[in-house]
Image (tube, rainbow, N blue to C red; front, top):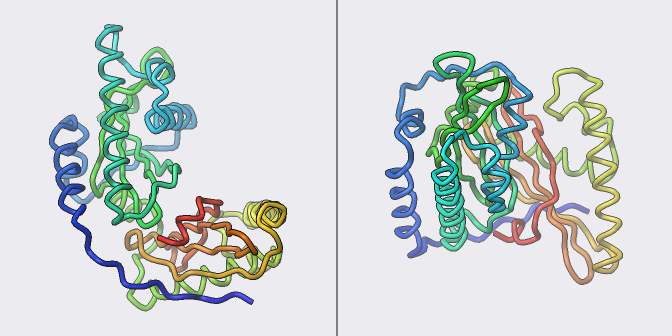
Length: 301
C-alpha cells in the first residue's frame, strides 16, 4: 500500500552564503554573450528543432559533467590548439567546482549526475543558437547555456556558462497554455500519485494519458516502456536488498511554475530504490515528462 509521508522542515544552512558567492563569481566570469541571455527581455525566440545541434549539445554537456577533455576538444570551435585546450580545461574546472559547491551546500540536495536538454534560443541567424540544459540535484537544478555556431555543415561550441534562471523562462515560454493557478499547481500531487501507482502496478492504461506525448500511440509506447523498465528494476532490487516491503510516494515540489518534481521509493528489507518523475504543466494539465531511477539519497533529501 502506498503512503505519502511528509518531509521535516528544512533548516537554513551556513553554506548558503558560500554557494551564493560561487554562483555570483561564475556569473561574473561567464561570457557576456551568454550572460546577456539571462538578463534580457522576457520574450525568448525559440530556435527550430535541429537533431544535429542536439547531438552536439548532448555530447558537450556530457563531456563537461564527466570531465572528458578529449571529447570536449573535438566540439569546441577554437582554431588555436593551445587556447582550445586552455578553454576546455577552464570550462570543466568551473563546472566541477560549481557542482561540488552546490552539492556540499545541501540546499538543493545531492547531485544526481543527470541532465536534460531543454531546447535552444535562436541566434542572429540560423547558423547560431544558444542551447539550454538543466543539471539536476535532488531538490533543484543548475541551468547551463551552450552557445553554438554552424560552419562547414557541423555545429560547434563557442561558449559555455551557467545561465541563472533562463531555463525556467525558456520552459515558461515553450510549454503551451497559461501557467498554472495556485489550485492547479496543487493538482500536481494527485497526478504524481496516480502516475506512480499506475507504473508500480503495471497499469499502462492508467499511466498512458499522463505521458507528455502528443500522439496517443506515443503515450502508450512510453507508458509501456516505463512500466516494463520499472518492473524489471524493482525485481532486480529484491535480489539485492531482500523482499520488497512497500512503496512510498513523496509529495512533489515545484522546480518552477511549470515544472514539478515528485519522488517515489520502493522499500526493501535491506535498502531502497528511488524513482523521479518530472511533471510539466501544459495546456491546462500536469503531464509526466520523464520517469527515471536516481540515487536513493534523492528520496531522503
